[in-house]
Every structure is written in structure tokens, then in C-alpha cells.
Image 1: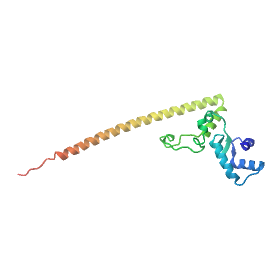
Image 2 (image 1 turned 45 degrees about the horizontal axis):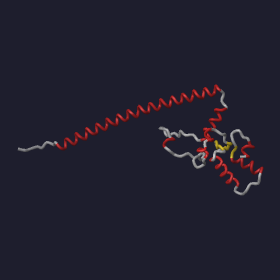
Image 3 (image 1 turned 30 degrees about the vertical axis):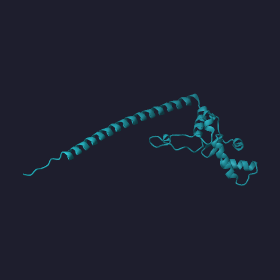
Image 4 (image 1 turned 120 degrees about the vertical axis):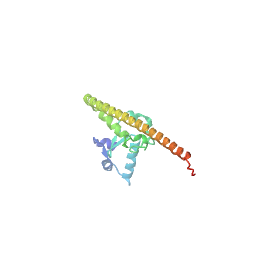
Amino acid sequence: MEAITNLREPGGSSRKTIAAYIQDQYWAPPKFKRILSAKLKYLTATGKLMKISRKYRIAQPSSLTDNKKYNNPILLLEGRERISPKKFGLDGVNNLVNRSQIDLELAKMRSMTPQEATAAAAEAVAEAEAAIAEAEQAAREADAAEADAEAALAFADAAMKTIQGRSTHTPMMIRV
């Protein structure tokens, strides 16, 4: 934490620069890089650090990180998401974002001017309306597919009854 604070890199500090800082300031034990890696993973999992594109930053307190449920390292491991059907859209694209991405977006929002915030809100509304229209179209297509399936099932039932009726009422030819 001290190394990241003192390095003051705007995008965050890489593991290599953190290790170099600690080795310059203090005596490094054997297997130092392995210990540092484990410690960085732990601090990220507990929410004290954020990892964004292989760089570590001190996490900003937000509404998400203040919630005790999200600070539990067992419930939230940074970079590890549970695989569930809910996280994928109909097109199979991953729609979930992790906590560090949300914190980054919140930091961007805090630094926006009112005009930028208005433009971002208008864009979000447009995206939501497009998603609603897409969902309505998918619902119409699903209803049409269901109607086609019911018609095909009715046709198959009628065909089976016709076939069964022919086999029981087979006329017999009598020779004289």
C-alpha cells in the first residue's frame, strides 16, 4: 500500500514497479516476488486495491465497496467471475462487469462536467431504449415460433390419426 501511495502513478502501478520500489527502500526476503504477488492478490480480493490492466491502484470507497457483502474475499475474488447463464446475453456475449470496472466508471462520472453527464445520460437512455426494442422483437419472434410449433404438432397429430385410421379400416378383397 505504501509503495502504491508513494509512487503516485496516475494509471496505477505495475507489479514490477512496486517490487522495484520495495527492494530499493527495504531488504527483500527470498522469494519476494512470490510473496508480493500473493499479497497483491489478497489486497485486491479484499477490496483494498483495484487491478486494472495489470496495474494496481488503491480502491476508492464507493457504494459498492462500502457494502460488507462485497468486501468478503470468499464472495468476491477480483478477476474471477462465477459462470452462470444469467451473465451471458442471447448472443453469448459476457454482459457482466467486475467491481474494478464499475469503480473506474464511477470515478469518470465524478470528474464529468454537467454537459458530459447530460450526454452520457442521453447515451445510456438511448442504449436502454434500443435494448427494450430488441427484447420486444425477440419476444415477438418467440411467440411466432411457438405458434409454428403448435401448428406443426397439430399437423403431426392429424397425420398420425390418419395413418392409424387407414391401418384399422383396410378393405379386404374377396374373390368370387
